[in-house]
Length: 298
Image (cartoon, rainbow, N blue to C red; front, side):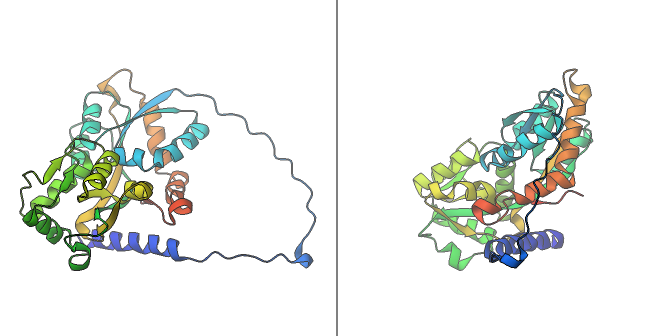
């Protein structure tokens, strides 16, 4: 738990530093201007196509825009096309068990390790992390932001006691699994008219919570990518229970003769390489003033 706390602290320090760092402008100096002869760069040979892989992943990586940023670069550099199927982590893992995907990018580490131990995947590697947050109405009728800004367990207890609208993913996704584990840690079994199980992806759940002026648990990246369209604010953040780790797993090619095992391994190697990690670290900084994911592949 200490390691997770340190990682969350590091994550919050990184996004704060990036958001607050001033831009440095260099004044033009005539004495330093030199004429440069134009360099003619040699034309790079286009990468030959190497087939297609099916990536089964979470809705959060899709809704945040990360995949739209990463995958065209991956294809350009490797020649491998990527067909993305964005579902909850539970469904993504099931697709792997059924041999319906080549590689997985998901965020429920305990289930991922079990998936590999059972022989469905060849290996698992950490890729990146961010954190979950509790979002809710801007006016925060329960005053959670003031009373429990960093304590998700106490926040959920107040929501349940007051029976204020809470929108759950309800889809066996990594986010849903995390939410249920937090309710359990708070010794609460959520049920009743106030507890809405949407059975939908993160983007849709945020829209529902905004429309109904309720609370929900979301990954930070999806919220930041949609915040301008939502009437929701960050209410609770920074709790060690809200750590959110993502992993990559190539599916065992013995599952299906059509599985592109080589392509899956190349994707895993690329996204955990220095190149892939640098791109992940870059995503979100220009638009949101902070990275949406922190790379941590070993």
